[in-house]
Length: 110
Length: 116
Image (cartoon, rainbow over the protein chains, first blue to last red):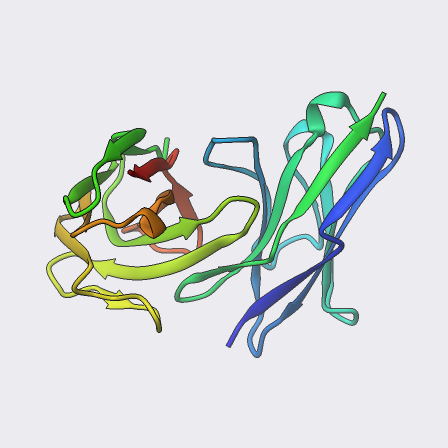
């Protein structure tokens, strides 16, 4: 069975600082991995996805993630946090269905 | 492209009544649709997978007689919460997978159900 684990339920950074949200996956087959962002009382917005092409994936809003098979990781980064990045972030792995991590709440301090 | 809508976006109902939530793929055909439930400050939990024209597959612990799922066409799936109770209050999100294949799912905006 496929699964993802997000390390850190809450991450707090200062505006302008590096954002790093961690995600590790477990999969017996090459995984399809996704990062989503969710703002309060809204649905999910796709940030980026890995589908076995380039290992460094660039997404929307300046986010990117690197697929590292040796570390079974797919961490999300953004060089400079903006106040509008404050939200809940979910890592997910997809096969026949999609399984989500527990989520990481990102807080951005002014 | 790949837009999924849900209706209603918010619903309040009395305990013991039934509520139907619609999920539509607007610009693509979806052989498979998924229903998730999200409690406050928690992640999305898959409730069931529905394939067009066949019975839904429910996750362990999800009561199929309480959460009725119908996927009558390639663009519409419905979730009916029967005999709703306050503990059914949650955010329900559907997603759809494109008939063309692939492992990406397209998510609806969610429905906030409050049972009083």
